Length: 453
Image (cartoon, rainbow, N blue to C red):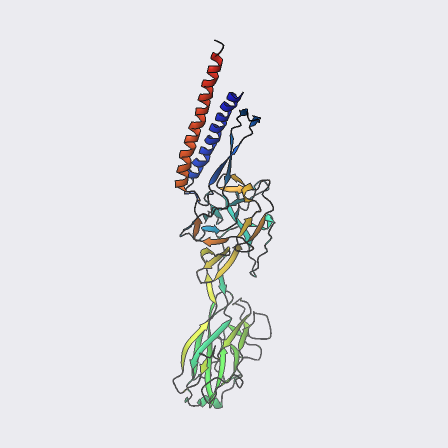
Protein backbone atom coordinates (compact mmCIF):
# COMPACT_ATOMS: atom_id res chain seq x y z
CA UNK A 1 0.00 0.00 0.00
CA UNK A 2 1.27 3.50 -0.87
CA UNK A 3 0.49 4.80 2.64
CA UNK A 4 2.67 2.10 4.18
CA UNK A 5 5.49 2.83 1.74
CA UNK A 6 5.22 6.51 2.62
CA UNK A 7 5.62 5.66 6.30
CA UNK A 8 8.66 3.55 5.49
CA UNK A 9 10.06 6.38 3.36
CA UNK A 10 9.67 8.72 6.30
CA UNK A 11 11.54 6.27 8.51
CA UNK A 12 14.27 6.00 5.85
CA UNK A 13 14.51 9.78 5.75
CA UNK A 14 14.87 9.96 9.53
CA UNK A 15 17.48 7.21 9.45
CA UNK A 16 19.47 8.87 6.67
CA UNK A 17 19.38 12.29 8.30
CA UNK A 18 20.33 10.93 11.72
CA UNK A 19 23.34 9.30 10.07
CA UNK A 20 24.13 12.63 8.42
CA UNK A 21 23.93 14.32 11.81
CA UNK A 22 26.59 11.89 13.05
CA UNK A 23 28.87 12.80 10.14
CA UNK A 24 28.35 16.54 10.73
CA UNK A 25 29.04 16.03 14.42
CA UNK A 26 32.33 14.31 13.58
CA UNK A 27 33.27 17.17 11.29
CA UNK A 28 32.54 19.84 13.89
CA UNK A 29 34.28 17.91 16.65
CA UNK A 30 37.41 17.59 14.48
CA UNK A 31 37.61 21.19 13.31
CA UNK A 32 41.02 21.46 15.02
CA UNK A 33 42.27 17.92 14.29
CA UNK A 34 45.49 17.95 12.30
CA UNK A 35 45.18 16.35 8.87
CA UNK A 36 41.46 15.62 9.28
CA UNK A 37 39.50 15.21 6.04
CA UNK A 38 35.88 16.25 6.37
CA UNK A 39 33.10 13.73 5.75
CA UNK A 40 30.70 14.51 2.93
CA UNK A 41 27.21 13.02 2.88
CA UNK A 42 25.43 12.29 -0.40
CA UNK A 43 21.81 11.17 -0.61
CA UNK A 44 20.51 8.75 -3.21
CA UNK A 45 16.91 7.80 -3.90
CA UNK A 46 15.99 4.22 -3.02
CA UNK A 47 14.02 1.97 -5.34
CA UNK A 48 10.46 3.08 -5.99
CA UNK A 49 7.79 1.49 -8.17
CA UNK A 50 5.09 3.00 -10.34
CA UNK A 51 2.13 1.45 -12.12
CA UNK A 52 1.49 3.35 -15.38
CA UNK A 53 1.72 6.61 -13.47
CA UNK A 54 -1.45 5.80 -11.51
CA UNK A 55 0.15 4.62 -8.28
CA UNK A 56 3.46 5.29 -6.59
CA UNK A 57 5.24 3.25 -3.97
CA UNK A 58 7.78 5.34 -2.05
CA UNK A 59 11.33 4.00 -1.82
CA UNK A 60 12.78 6.51 0.61
CA UNK A 61 16.38 7.64 0.65
CA UNK A 62 19.85 6.32 1.40
CA UNK A 63 22.86 8.28 2.70
CA UNK A 64 26.45 7.64 1.67
CA UNK A 65 29.41 9.07 3.58
CA UNK A 66 32.96 9.56 2.34
CA UNK A 67 36.06 11.37 3.56
CA UNK A 68 37.07 14.10 1.12
CA UNK A 69 40.58 12.76 0.69
CA UNK A 70 41.58 15.12 -2.11
CA UNK A 71 40.82 18.30 -0.20
CA UNK A 72 43.96 20.11 0.97
CA UNK A 73 44.08 21.52 4.48
CA UNK A 74 45.78 24.85 5.07
CA UNK A 75 49.35 24.62 6.43
CA UNK A 76 49.79 25.91 9.96
CA UNK A 77 53.28 26.93 11.12
CA UNK A 78 54.85 25.04 14.03
CA UNK A 79 58.00 25.56 16.09
CA UNK A 80 58.67 21.80 16.31
CA UNK A 81 61.21 20.66 13.72
CA UNK A 82 59.65 17.17 13.40
CA UNK A 83 56.13 18.45 12.75
CA UNK A 84 55.37 17.73 9.09
CA UNK A 85 52.68 18.76 6.61
CA UNK A 86 51.97 17.26 3.20
CA UNK A 87 51.15 19.59 0.33
CA UNK A 88 49.54 17.54 -2.40
CA UNK A 89 48.86 13.79 -2.78
CA UNK A 90 50.34 11.23 -0.42
CA UNK A 91 50.26 9.79 3.08
CA UNK A 92 52.80 9.12 5.78
CA UNK A 93 53.36 5.41 6.40
CA UNK A 94 52.90 4.55 10.09
CA UNK A 95 52.45 1.58 12.38
CA UNK A 96 51.06 1.15 15.86
CA UNK A 97 54.37 -0.36 17.07
CA UNK A 98 58.03 0.45 16.42
CA UNK A 99 60.86 -2.11 16.22
CA UNK A 100 58.78 -4.80 17.94
CA UNK A 101 56.01 -4.74 15.33
CA UNK A 102 54.87 -8.12 14.05
CA UNK A 103 52.72 -9.48 11.21
CA UNK A 104 49.59 -8.61 13.17
CA UNK A 105 50.53 -4.90 13.21
CA UNK A 106 49.47 -3.57 9.81
CA UNK A 107 50.94 -0.59 8.02
CA UNK A 108 48.62 2.38 8.16
CA UNK A 109 48.48 5.71 6.35
CA UNK A 110 48.05 9.17 7.80
CA UNK A 111 48.06 12.87 6.91
CA UNK A 112 48.55 13.91 10.55
CA UNK A 113 52.18 14.96 10.94
CA UNK A 114 52.37 15.71 14.67
CA UNK A 115 55.51 13.61 15.15
CA UNK A 116 57.81 13.99 18.15
CA UNK A 117 60.48 11.70 19.62
CA UNK A 118 59.17 9.38 22.32
CA UNK A 119 61.17 8.08 25.29
CA UNK A 120 63.11 5.73 22.99
CA UNK A 121 63.73 8.38 20.33
CA UNK A 122 61.20 7.06 17.78
CA UNK A 123 59.14 9.64 15.90
CA UNK A 124 55.62 9.05 17.17
CA UNK A 125 52.36 10.88 16.50
CA UNK A 126 49.96 12.07 19.17
CA UNK A 127 47.70 9.14 18.25
CA UNK A 128 50.52 6.70 19.10
CA UNK A 129 51.58 5.74 15.57
CA UNK A 130 55.24 5.42 14.58
CA UNK A 131 56.55 7.09 11.43
CA UNK A 132 58.43 4.80 9.00
CA UNK A 133 60.96 5.62 6.31
CA UNK A 134 63.89 4.38 4.23
CA UNK A 135 67.30 4.33 5.92
CA UNK A 136 70.06 6.40 4.31
CA UNK A 137 73.21 4.30 3.88
CA UNK A 138 76.65 5.44 5.01
CA UNK A 139 77.52 6.43 1.45
CA UNK A 140 74.43 8.66 1.24
CA UNK A 141 72.37 6.38 -0.99
CA UNK A 142 68.79 5.31 -0.32
CA UNK A 143 67.44 1.88 -1.22
CA UNK A 144 63.91 2.90 -2.14
CA UNK A 145 61.39 0.21 -3.04
CA UNK A 146 58.06 1.71 -4.13
CA UNK A 147 55.98 -1.34 -3.19
CA UNK A 148 57.95 -3.20 -0.48
CA UNK A 149 56.75 -2.10 2.95
CA UNK A 150 59.35 -4.39 4.54
CA UNK A 151 62.07 -2.02 3.30
CA UNK A 152 60.81 0.63 5.74
CA UNK A 153 62.14 1.14 9.26
CA UNK A 154 60.72 3.03 12.23
CA UNK A 155 62.48 6.40 12.32
CA UNK A 156 64.60 6.77 15.45
CA UNK A 157 66.37 10.07 16.12
CA UNK A 158 67.84 9.53 19.60
CA UNK A 159 70.93 7.63 20.59
CA UNK A 160 72.78 8.67 17.44
CA UNK A 161 76.53 8.57 17.98
CA UNK A 162 78.44 11.81 17.69
CA UNK A 163 80.76 12.42 14.81
CA UNK A 164 84.07 14.06 13.93
CA UNK A 165 85.64 14.95 10.60
CA UNK A 166 89.33 14.86 9.69
CA UNK A 167 90.92 17.87 7.99
CA UNK A 168 91.42 17.26 4.26
CA UNK A 169 91.93 20.76 2.89
CA UNK A 170 94.04 23.73 3.96
CA UNK A 171 94.23 27.06 2.16
CA UNK A 172 96.00 30.24 3.16
CA UNK A 173 96.21 33.83 2.04
CA UNK A 174 99.52 35.36 3.18
CA UNK A 175 102.37 37.61 2.08
CA UNK A 176 106.10 36.85 2.33
CA UNK A 177 108.08 40.10 2.37
CA UNK A 178 110.04 40.34 -0.89
CA UNK A 179 112.70 42.62 0.62
CA UNK A 180 113.44 40.11 3.35
CA UNK A 181 117.19 39.47 3.42
CA UNK A 182 118.38 36.03 2.49
CA UNK A 183 118.62 34.07 5.72
CA UNK A 184 122.12 33.62 7.19
CA UNK A 185 121.12 29.99 7.74
CA UNK A 186 120.55 29.44 4.01
CA UNK A 187 124.15 28.39 3.46
CA UNK A 188 124.02 25.57 6.02
CA UNK A 189 120.37 24.67 5.57
CA UNK A 190 119.81 20.96 4.92
CA UNK A 191 116.28 19.56 4.63
CA UNK A 192 117.33 16.21 6.10
CA UNK A 193 119.48 17.18 9.06
CA UNK A 194 119.66 20.93 9.58
CA UNK A 195 116.02 21.88 9.00
CA UNK A 196 113.14 23.90 10.38
CA UNK A 197 111.09 20.92 11.54
CA UNK A 198 113.81 19.85 13.99
CA UNK A 199 114.19 23.37 15.37
CA UNK A 200 117.86 23.57 14.25
CA UNK A 201 116.96 26.37 11.83
CA UNK A 202 114.70 29.28 12.76
CA UNK A 203 112.24 30.13 9.97
CA UNK A 204 112.05 33.67 8.65
CA UNK A 205 108.29 33.30 8.89
CA UNK A 206 106.09 30.49 10.12
CA UNK A 207 102.37 29.74 10.23
CA UNK A 208 100.98 27.42 12.96
CA UNK A 209 97.59 26.06 11.89
CA UNK A 210 95.15 23.77 13.69
CA UNK A 211 94.08 20.54 11.96
CA UNK A 212 91.88 17.63 13.07
CA UNK A 213 92.55 13.91 12.78
CA UNK A 214 89.97 11.18 12.04
CA UNK A 215 88.91 11.06 15.70
CA UNK A 216 88.54 14.81 16.00
CA UNK A 217 91.84 15.25 17.81
CA UNK A 218 93.51 18.64 17.42
CA UNK A 219 97.07 18.99 16.09
CA UNK A 220 99.25 22.01 15.31
CA UNK A 221 100.54 21.80 11.75
CA UNK A 222 103.29 24.35 11.08
CA UNK A 223 104.44 25.79 7.76
CA UNK A 224 107.95 27.27 7.97
CA UNK A 225 109.42 29.63 5.35
CA UNK A 226 113.16 30.35 4.96
CA UNK A 227 114.38 32.75 2.28
CA UNK A 228 117.26 31.11 0.39
CA UNK A 229 117.48 33.28 -2.76
CA UNK A 230 115.72 36.15 -4.45
CA UNK A 231 112.00 35.29 -4.79
CA UNK A 232 112.72 31.79 -3.46
CA UNK A 233 111.68 30.40 -0.07
CA UNK A 234 112.51 26.95 1.27
CA UNK A 235 109.27 25.65 2.81
CA UNK A 236 108.53 22.81 5.20
CA UNK A 237 105.17 21.47 6.42
CA UNK A 238 105.52 19.58 9.70
CA UNK A 239 103.92 18.30 12.89
CA UNK A 240 105.65 17.86 16.26
CA UNK A 241 108.19 15.04 16.06
CA UNK A 242 106.45 13.35 19.00
CA UNK A 243 103.29 12.82 16.94
CA UNK A 244 104.73 11.57 13.66
CA UNK A 245 107.14 8.77 12.69
CA UNK A 246 109.46 9.80 9.86
CA UNK A 247 108.95 8.09 6.54
CA UNK A 248 108.89 8.55 2.80
CA UNK A 249 112.29 10.26 2.79
CA UNK A 250 111.16 12.93 5.26
CA UNK A 251 112.58 13.66 8.70
CA UNK A 252 111.78 15.26 12.07
CA UNK A 253 108.00 15.34 11.69
CA UNK A 254 108.10 16.70 8.14
CA UNK A 255 105.05 16.01 6.01
CA UNK A 256 106.21 17.89 2.93
CA UNK A 257 109.06 20.11 1.79
CA UNK A 258 110.25 22.04 -1.22
CA UNK A 259 110.71 25.54 -2.60
CA UNK A 260 108.13 28.22 -3.26
CA UNK A 261 109.15 30.50 -6.11
CA UNK A 262 107.56 33.86 -6.90
CA UNK A 263 107.55 35.91 -10.08
CA UNK A 264 108.98 39.41 -10.38
CA UNK A 265 105.41 40.62 -9.93
CA UNK A 266 105.02 38.98 -6.52
CA UNK A 267 102.79 36.09 -7.66
CA UNK A 268 103.39 32.44 -6.87
CA UNK A 269 105.06 30.64 -9.75
CA UNK A 270 103.41 27.25 -9.44
CA UNK A 271 105.39 25.84 -12.35
CA UNK A 272 108.77 26.58 -10.72
CA UNK A 273 107.71 25.72 -7.17
CA UNK A 274 108.49 22.24 -5.84
CA UNK A 275 106.45 22.10 -2.62
CA UNK A 276 103.90 19.26 -2.96
CA UNK A 277 100.22 20.23 -3.21
CA UNK A 278 99.18 17.53 -0.71
CA UNK A 279 100.68 15.84 2.33
CA UNK A 280 99.78 12.41 3.73
CA UNK A 281 100.08 10.92 7.20
CA UNK A 282 99.58 7.17 7.19
CA UNK A 283 97.97 5.16 9.92
CA UNK A 284 100.51 3.57 12.22
CA UNK A 285 102.09 0.52 10.63
CA UNK A 286 101.53 1.68 7.04
CA UNK A 287 104.76 2.35 5.16
CA UNK A 288 105.40 4.77 2.31
CA UNK A 289 104.90 8.10 4.04
CA UNK A 290 105.13 9.59 7.53
CA UNK A 291 103.02 7.65 10.05
CA UNK A 292 101.07 8.66 13.09
CA UNK A 293 102.68 7.52 16.30
CA UNK A 294 101.11 4.33 17.69
CA UNK A 295 99.51 6.14 20.63
CA UNK A 296 97.57 8.39 18.24
CA UNK A 297 95.51 5.47 16.89
CA UNK A 298 93.99 7.41 14.00
CA UNK A 299 93.43 6.75 10.33
CA UNK A 300 95.45 7.70 7.28
CA UNK A 301 94.88 11.32 6.39
CA UNK A 302 95.68 13.40 3.30
CA UNK A 303 95.54 17.21 3.45
CA UNK A 304 95.39 19.23 0.25
CA UNK A 305 97.51 22.42 0.35
CA UNK A 306 95.99 25.37 -1.47
CA UNK A 307 98.63 28.10 -1.69
CA UNK A 308 97.77 29.45 -5.11
CA UNK A 309 94.99 32.01 -5.68
CA UNK A 310 91.37 30.83 -5.82
CA UNK A 311 89.43 32.53 -8.62
CA UNK A 312 92.29 35.01 -8.90
CA UNK A 313 92.08 36.00 -5.25
CA UNK A 314 94.18 35.23 -2.16
CA UNK A 315 96.90 32.65 -2.00
CA UNK A 316 100.57 33.26 -1.25
CA UNK A 317 102.19 36.44 -2.55
CA UNK A 318 105.57 38.09 -2.17
CA UNK A 319 105.35 41.89 -2.14
CA UNK A 320 107.47 44.44 -0.34
CA UNK A 321 105.30 44.47 2.74
CA UNK A 322 105.70 42.73 6.11
CA UNK A 323 105.20 39.00 6.11
CA UNK A 324 101.71 38.39 7.46
CA UNK A 325 98.96 35.82 7.41
CA UNK A 326 95.80 37.21 5.86
CA UNK A 327 93.34 34.34 6.22
CA UNK A 328 93.50 30.60 6.65
CA UNK A 329 90.84 28.01 6.03
CA UNK A 330 91.09 24.47 7.37
CA UNK A 331 88.19 22.04 7.20
CA UNK A 332 87.51 19.27 9.70
CA UNK A 333 85.73 19.34 13.03
CA UNK A 334 86.18 17.99 16.55
CA UNK A 335 83.79 15.47 18.07
CA UNK A 336 80.22 16.71 18.30
CA UNK A 337 77.14 15.31 20.05
CA UNK A 338 73.64 15.30 18.59
CA UNK A 339 72.12 18.77 18.92
CA UNK A 340 68.87 18.59 16.94
CA UNK A 341 66.99 16.87 14.15
CA UNK A 342 65.59 18.54 11.07
CA UNK A 343 63.49 17.40 8.10
CA UNK A 344 63.80 19.04 4.69
CA UNK A 345 61.26 19.35 1.88
CA UNK A 346 62.52 16.15 0.22
CA UNK A 347 61.69 14.19 3.37
CA UNK A 348 65.27 13.62 4.53
CA UNK A 349 65.63 13.36 8.31
CA UNK A 350 68.96 14.99 9.17
CA UNK A 351 70.92 14.84 12.43
CA UNK A 352 72.66 18.09 13.33
CA UNK A 353 75.67 17.85 15.67
CA UNK A 354 77.13 20.45 18.00
CA UNK A 355 80.26 20.71 15.84
CA UNK A 356 78.23 21.80 12.80
CA UNK A 357 78.32 18.45 11.00
CA UNK A 358 75.11 17.03 9.59
CA UNK A 359 74.16 13.50 8.63
CA UNK A 360 71.13 12.30 6.71
CA UNK A 361 69.60 9.30 8.49
CA UNK A 362 66.27 8.50 6.83
CA UNK A 363 64.11 9.56 3.93
CA UNK A 364 60.37 9.74 4.51
CA UNK A 365 58.39 8.35 1.55
CA UNK A 366 54.83 9.31 0.69
CA UNK A 367 52.35 6.55 -0.11
CA UNK A 368 49.92 7.04 -2.98
CA UNK A 369 47.02 4.94 -4.30
CA UNK A 370 44.90 4.96 -7.47
CA UNK A 371 41.69 5.25 -5.38
CA UNK A 372 42.08 7.24 -2.17
CA UNK A 373 38.34 7.11 -1.46
CA UNK A 374 38.52 3.36 -0.87
CA UNK A 375 40.84 3.75 2.13
CA UNK A 376 39.11 2.66 5.32
CA UNK A 377 39.33 5.03 8.33
CA UNK A 378 40.46 3.66 11.69
CA UNK A 379 41.05 5.09 15.14
CA UNK A 380 43.59 7.87 15.47
CA UNK A 381 42.91 9.58 12.16
CA UNK A 382 44.72 6.90 10.14
CA UNK A 383 43.58 4.77 7.22
CA UNK A 384 44.09 1.17 6.20
CA UNK A 385 44.01 -0.58 2.86
CA UNK A 386 40.67 -1.89 1.69
CA UNK A 387 39.32 -3.56 -1.44
CA UNK A 388 39.36 -1.11 -4.32
CA UNK A 389 42.25 0.99 -3.04
CA UNK A 390 44.59 -0.19 -5.78
CA UNK A 391 48.33 -0.76 -5.85
CA UNK A 392 50.41 1.02 -3.23
CA UNK A 393 53.25 3.21 -4.55
CA UNK A 394 55.80 4.85 -2.26
CA UNK A 395 57.92 7.66 -3.65
CA UNK A 396 60.12 10.44 -2.40
CA UNK A 397 58.34 13.71 -1.72
CA UNK A 398 57.90 15.77 -4.87
CA UNK A 399 58.65 12.85 -7.23
CA UNK A 400 56.34 11.59 -9.97
CA UNK A 401 53.31 13.61 -8.91
CA UNK A 402 53.71 12.95 -5.20
CA UNK A 403 53.08 15.83 -2.80
CA UNK A 404 55.76 17.79 -0.98
CA UNK A 405 56.68 17.66 2.69
CA UNK A 406 56.84 20.92 4.64
CA UNK A 407 58.80 20.77 7.89
CA UNK A 408 57.80 22.82 10.94
CA UNK A 409 54.21 22.89 9.74
CA UNK A 410 50.98 20.93 10.16
CA UNK A 411 48.10 20.40 7.77
CA UNK A 412 44.92 21.87 9.17
CA UNK A 413 41.50 20.26 9.14
CA UNK A 414 39.40 20.74 5.99
CA UNK A 415 36.23 21.38 8.00
CA UNK A 416 34.40 24.64 7.24
CA UNK A 417 32.34 25.49 10.31
CA UNK A 418 29.98 27.84 8.45
CA UNK A 419 29.14 25.08 6.00
CA UNK A 420 28.73 22.51 8.75
CA UNK A 421 26.35 24.71 10.74
CA UNK A 422 24.29 25.29 7.59
CA UNK A 423 24.17 21.56 6.99
CA UNK A 424 23.20 21.06 10.63
CA UNK A 425 20.12 23.25 10.20
CA UNK A 426 19.17 21.56 6.91
CA UNK A 427 19.59 18.11 8.46
CA UNK A 428 17.44 19.06 11.44
CA UNK A 429 14.65 20.35 9.16
CA UNK A 430 14.89 17.29 6.93
CA UNK A 431 14.66 15.00 9.95
CA UNK A 432 11.61 16.86 11.24
CA UNK A 433 10.01 16.75 7.80
CA UNK A 434 10.60 13.00 7.56
CA UNK A 435 9.00 12.51 10.97
CA UNK A 436 6.02 14.51 9.71
CA UNK A 437 5.60 11.97 6.91
CA UNK A 438 5.18 9.25 9.50
CA UNK A 439 2.61 11.15 11.56
CA UNK A 440 0.65 12.11 8.43
CA UNK A 441 0.68 8.55 7.11
CA UNK A 442 -0.43 7.37 10.56
CA UNK A 443 -3.43 9.72 10.46
CA UNK A 444 -4.35 8.51 6.98
CA UNK A 445 -4.17 4.87 8.10
CA UNK A 446 -6.34 5.77 11.07
CA UNK A 447 -8.96 7.26 8.73
CA UNK A 448 -8.85 4.12 6.64
CA UNK A 449 -9.43 1.93 9.67
CA UNK A 450 -12.38 4.11 10.73
CA UNK A 451 -14.22 3.27 7.46
CA UNK A 452 -15.48 -0.05 8.86
CA UNK A 453 -17.10 1.57 11.88
